[in-house]
Length: 254
Image (cartoon, rainbow, N blue to C red; front, side, top):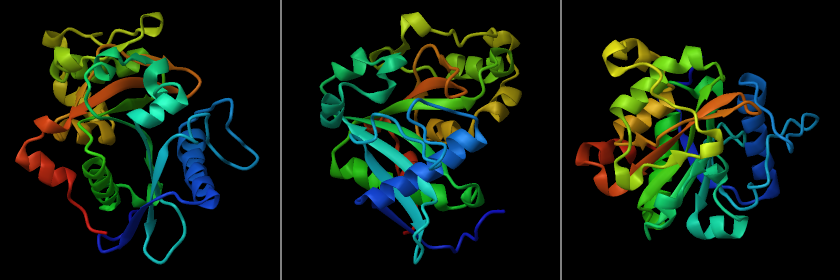
């Protein structure tokens, strides 16, 4: 079931411990209960998904107007916040040296999720509208973050991973690489042998959306057995977004 496109939403930044716990409860429902993830700080008794980075991130939440339930979440970490945290969240998986040495304003995105009842409608566009405002406010130039495929079976993911490698690889100036110790090749099927249509069907909707907005991926994937995902690094240079993409990115009603 999805909500009506006429549903009105509110986007805001977390301001209280109660709001943060509500965001972490939604994350638990999606990433732990629905997708089978885990982590050392996950609280199963309280049904909270959390990690050591939460105190350093800004947390953007989405709610229906007039209601307190959190139905959408984004975690946002700027460069200055990452310095205080001892690095970006995704640095455990990817070598971010190219981005960090670029002298451009960076924003790491993570833990993006929606309540199942609101998927497929306008809710994600509204959340992106809030994200676009945040990007403008902080003059962000490069967005990036780990984006996940559900599961760790590379045989099942060979098609979409290969498609991303062959068709959506980042330019050299932005080509983040999975760390050598955990590097998983993505070009598992030669481009000439790839069924591109079938492979694209397997690409998660969120990754497809970023690609439509001009996003690209780094080289190599990270297989996260703890979180039951296979991660790629998505990168978006806001200066490269064309006018149509920018209109899509900023679209939404609050």
